[in-house]
Each structure stands twice: as structure tokens, then as C-alpha cells.
Image (tube, rainbow over all chains, first blue to last red; front, side, top):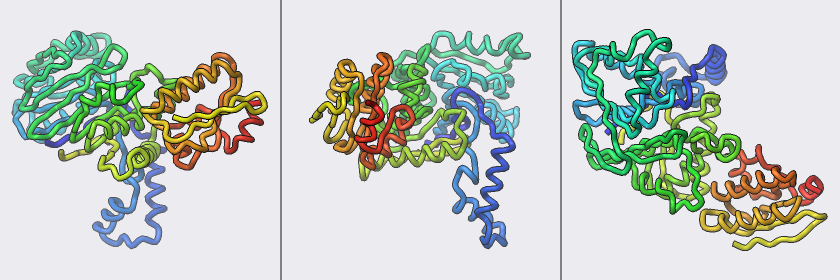
Length: 318
Length: 110
């Protein structure tokens, strides 16, 4: 299985402005002084090996959309944030509009940042495509219809050419979809959100975003079971712990430290920090990643947990 | 967990010992909340604490909120290097008064 991240930002898109780009160029040029960069290969090696990611790249600004590549014929996506626009465009660029596809989308919930990409998902306009939208909320159809209607959007939902189906799921039950075993679970978030535990070909990926954790005893937390033995855990690490339990308490999000503790206790192998706070720039996100790895070392020296901070375009082979 | 206490210049000083983790944080929380309820000024001396988990920090946040609600004063002092790192990673150093020494804390909280 392969995980491809199309959108990793929380709450709303957060594009770079010219100042941020200029700052990266400036930092790169300063780092390049006195380097031997006479060939294209030397330049590539310098960018890839000598520059920090916050300078050579960006975590990106699209909101939640994650693809699970199973090797089967059908596409599997989690959420329809602004990242799904890029997913659709890449698909069309690769195959053109003549080839028809089947998509399975799993919705964590219906807040703006998780649905806003759908009106710009070009495959939804093409007859012959089939889009099955799965989720535990009863109002998914209404939410998507409402955002794609006058006066908010010029093309009404009923004008979409693809066949769009809605599949209501129950948390705690296990479903077989597109060759994967899928189990949704309830999370603590305004209006409820749902995480998904996907298993296939001996691998398990958990998608758990927009989920606040308020537990007194870690071992009693049901998420230990949901995350148990996961090969990859995609986790809402939007806030610092201090923010999560003070000014932003009950805002429905979690922190990097809670992610580490849950992942280690559950025996997960790879923690992927996700749903980044939009006010954080690349340098801040990189710093938080370093701190999160350090915290894991403090909690359990010698642990084998891999920790990654998701970015738009990231691919993880499971 | 062992938590000793004494009064110094009208300030209740708590000295927990060992690791404040998921096993010990409920006791830490109870002691902290009782202390804040009974005293206007509370100092937690962390010199004997090797580690504090998110659950322990949550207890500290509850005590801080309770103290502020009654216009009380609460501070922490003498963080070990590891606990100091955890305060920085969690950003608790931005929301709780942190003092280098117990003497400095007592002077400020008095």
C-alpha cells in the first residue's frame, strides 16, 4: 500500500506569500556560499542533502485529502479538502477525460475544510465516473449540495455529470470496500468526527484527524485499540499541548505530545503528524517535528516509532 | 507518588518526587487541586521530578485555571533539564509561571 498526501493543512488553505518564498531563496543562497555547485547534479545534491526541508520545500497549504493506493482499480480517498483538486487534476493529466474511474471517499466529518475541494474536483463533472462517498454522518449529501448551490457556487450540485452515491456507515462495524477492510470509529469533535482503520494485504493505516483527546488514564482510552499495531497512524497534531488544554480546549483537536503517547502505547510503528495549524510557517512546523521526535525519545528511550510531519505531496510506502 | 509539602512565607510549596506519568498523575492532580483550593499561593518545586507526561501537565493546567479563577497565585520552579524540555515542547512555559529557583518563585508569589 502507498499513502499519498494531497492536503495536510488544518482549518483553511494556507498558501505561501512572496515574503516566504523570498526568505527561502535568501536562506538557500546564503547556505550555498563557498559551495561547489558547478553541475546540475551538484545543485540537486545540495538542495536535497544540505538544505533543511523548510528551506528546500514546503509543507504546503491544501486542506485534508489523503489517498490510499491499494493497487486495485478503484481509488480510495480520505476527505475532500482543497487537496482533492490537485488529485483530480493529476488524474486527468495522466489519463484524460475519456477514461472512467471509480472513487471511494471516506469522510471524517463535514466541516468546511474537509469538503471545500469537491466543487473543484474535475472528475465529478465527467459522466461515467462513479464517486461513492462513505461516512457516518447522515447529512453528507446535504452538506455537499449546500456548498455547491447559489449563491455560494455557480455550478449546482445537480449539474455534476458523475454518478455520485452516498454510503452511510456505522461506527464500530467493519466494511469491505475496494479490497480494504474499513472500520470507522467515533471521535471527539464539534458535530462529531470519525476516524477510519484501514487494513489490507497485511498492513494497517489509521486516518484519525479532527479528534480531541481528553482522557485521564491512557490505558482506558479506546483509541489505543483503534490505533493498535498500526503500520501508519495519521494523527491530528494541530496544537501544542498547552493550547490544546487551555485556550483551545474543546476546539476538537489534539497535540503532538498526545500523538506520541498514544502511538507508543498502542504499538503503532509510524506516526504522521497531520492537520497542521495554518498560522505555522514551514520553519515552525519543522521545529515542531524535531521537538516531537525528541519527546518520543524522552518518553521511551530506544523506541522504534518513526515520526513524520505530513506535507502536500508526501508519499509513504507502507 | 511521594509529594512532600511545607509552608514558606505564606506559600504552600509542593515537592513531588519521581515520574509524573499516567500512573501517578491522578494523585498529583488531587494533591494539586486540594492545595490550590486551600492556599492562595502554591509553588510546585520540580527539582525531584524526572518526567511529566501530558496527563501530568493536564493536572497542572487544571490547577492553574482553578487558581486564576479564585485570583490565586501558582508557579513552578527548579525544572530538571528534561522537564524543562517538556515544558518547552508543550509550550507550558508560555502559560505557567516558571522560575529558575525556589527562592525566586517565593519572592514573586509572596
